[in-house]
Amino acid sequence: MTSWRRSKLSGVAPDEIDVPFSPLSEGANRLLSEAATPVMDWLADQLPTGTAVILADPEARILDRRASGNMYSRYLDEAFCVPGSSYSEEHIGTNGIGSVIETSNPVIITGAEHYRENLQSFTCAGTPLHHPLRRNLTGVLSVSCNYLDTHGLMVPLLQSAAREIKARMYAESSLRERMLLEEFLGASRRTSAAVVSLNEDFLIKNTAAATLLDPTDHALLWEWATASMAQRTEIRSEVTLRSGAVVQAWGRMVGERPGGAAGVLVELRSPGSGSPHRKSAQPVSDPDLPGRSATWRRTLSDVDSAARSGGDVLLTGEAGTGKTRVATRVAGGNAVIFEAALAAVEQDWAMQIRSKLDGPEPVIIRQLEVLPPSHIALLAALLGSPHTARVVATATTTDLGSQAARLLDHFGVRVELPPLRQRPEDIPDIATALLREAGGPSARVQPAALRVLGNHPWPGNIRELGAVLASARLRARGADIGDTHLPAEYRQAGGSTLPSLQRSERETILAALDDCRGNKLAAAELLGIARSTLYRKMRAFRIDDQRWA
Image (cartoon, rainbow, N blue to C red):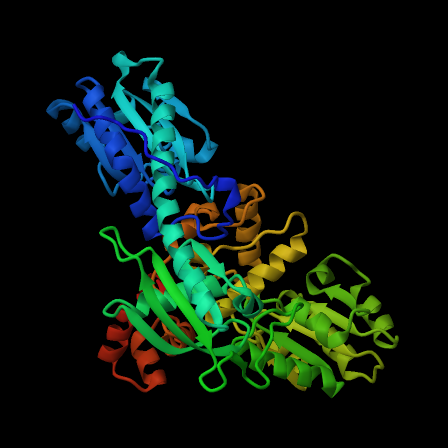
């Protein structure tokens, strides 16, 4: 029988360490598994035949399993209780892993309390595992047995084991972070440059770096380091930070160990002067219309030109892209807003608009695409008549049919807003603005969650992002939003992010297929490519033609 010895902890209490970032990563999974393995081995030796010890991550995916007895091991295999399987409540219903994640508390599910019939011969107890420094959920430890062998000590035993795993995680985390701290202190004494010592979930910076970096730069620097250091121990290259500062970044791995490096030490300098420099006219995110991508900067330039023109303006774009907010920017905060959808139920809707067209305040008409056909000609006549008020209208599409041609022709200035999927690099700024506008306790979106959000296609655009963040904020319960706080369908949708050029190519292909209603021969002709090339690119970009079926 193996012994279960308590890890020797460092003298630093978790409360004295400021660890701000990601809730889960490959490194965190590795840390959890390394800390849990000896404890699981000990439990497996102590528990009788017909029991199992199971470790799962915060997504309820099984990481490891110890089953006592060949027969019970086969039972678990038949129930797909194997590494890699998901036991989330969304997939399995009530169970001793997914229910722990949903409640954030220890649970014991016996027999028929399981939702799935094939689990009703089991009793499963589970307890949450929290990171000792960040305090976020890092996994679940569960014990299962035959329903007839249920014992009241299952939960207390698990809680004791969870405390041991937490102690081992703390000892290992403290070691990695002490190594990063020692390297940071040594580098800070040698140079006046900006110095950062970091890994996937920990960051230390000196005063020079603190004035240079914002929270999202942690993810940026870590991705730069991990991508560049695959074959080298030292790297040097130019990096553009979120603020627009362009720096020469020099990095080297810290503490190469069997379980992986403790992290990376990075010095940030200007290539010429020894201090970071800022590009002239580098864009800063607008607090009201956030984003600093090239796509969004061009759009804002068009918006500003439209506002200065003094004429009537039509704003188009997909639902949820922020057309009303941009309309308010163009028209001004004192504008009178009319909903086109109400024209069908308010008999004096047109008369209300007519009275305002001769007034001093600008007029905003939202969602022209839902204007009843009976009102299109009437509104076109009103807008075609001399009026003193400026009119700004929004429409989800410019394809409103031939009846609306006169109405659309009235607007000499038109601006189309890009969908969010065409500017995923703006998501950090947009998320920050949405959380700020929601009020309440301040919260940040952690780097791991930003990576997941950046990979989603966002058919509902900014409105959909706002709803997801509101849901995640409730689940975070006042803490910073991590990827585990996002709704399950968004966590599972994350894939690899396409480079900007490939993303633009994918959008062009989708637009051509939409215009041709899914006819691939016609779309290929429209794009000027062979049909075989179109098929190949659709496979490469994972474009599912079922959307046009």
